[in-house]
Image 1 (spheres, helix red, strand yellow):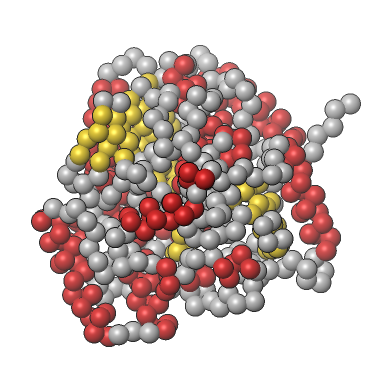
Image 2 (image 1 turned 30 degrees about the horizontal axis):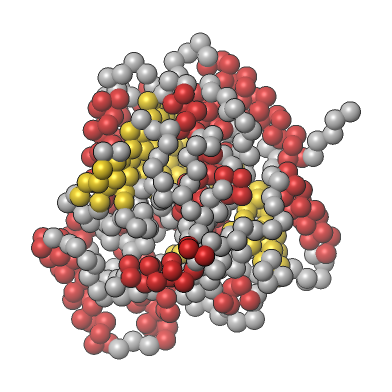
Length: 524
């Protein structure tokens, strides 16, 4: 008799339900797919999730019309690897894109969501941020942000297409939306469904808001500080104490707008000056130190982050309005998510990379009229390995080789079956700019166990009593049995996903010294 563990049973049930769901779609029109993907957007900055740093009324429209996932996570919280997982449904070790720093170009010849949908007759396009160092494969149309880091700039970005490079003038969120709406205008004339990746740069570092938000900038406004903004990390794991993520130490003058970015037009530079110059003068006169200095930098950082999100949200509204006005919402799946979360002052930090909740958790909102009950929510543990299997199942397309993820279609039902699952996480990028130690771990319904294998250090968190990863319970009295169980679960996941015991070597030609110099030059 065949025996299955909990994860394997869940995968089998999900697969069978998804196949049944997909078969019922065969006789109906295949859905269009619009995947709205942002960069570094923390759940705490999406108002659909409640107490938010910023109102996001247009992103919230997707939640109101569909489902909000309250426990969605990524398997490697860094830009390029997360995007590779979206396309492949595979964890980083299996798709070959481990790291922004030294993975090399993404192998687009492997099985991807875009290639499978293209092969099934879908029109396919990716517009906006790409960050995989290769030309997109499986897309009929691609128009992606381009520079040596594939990050682009908030103002006047350069785009790369199959026809060459295009220099532009304007704000990046506006330009990406202009290009997207233009492509949709052509796609809707075809008698074929479409798959669109609408990828925003926002709100990636260095958080420069759009023109409207610059005009409305209020230097005196104050956003709520996280409880752990002044947390002392001494005495914690070596991994935490050595990370280079502190706002007070590692943010640049560009980050907090004490210095203007390069290549702005005179009109754009005037907007920047009107927003920030007076506040900068006051800061320099105050000569702040200690907690007062951190407080000022935190406010500048988080307010420009929030204002950038508002600029992006407005453009997402433009796109949703276009879909409505052109009758495209009737049979279109609209998703909103981000490549990872972000530290917005928690632990006194910025950036991502960690398995911590604020870093690995992402917003995930989906609308599909007639298939998803408006205003519904799910607390199922889901991950970005599930994006591709879900969309393929909805389109009635079967992958040729298995993916790590499972379809989420069964969760759309009004009374979904029980969902039992553990999540695997693995961060590889060390050596790296922020000095975050390599680690892997398991996230269950209640607990999280993390292993920093370069340092041989462990962390254990009870996410019911400690949802912000503040109290390490590893080695504490009363947790031996829980730890042992979690270690078994972790090893089971590594076996299930066939994770190699030895990490790939860092290629000398993409080593940390070269990348560090390149990043330093970016801020000069």
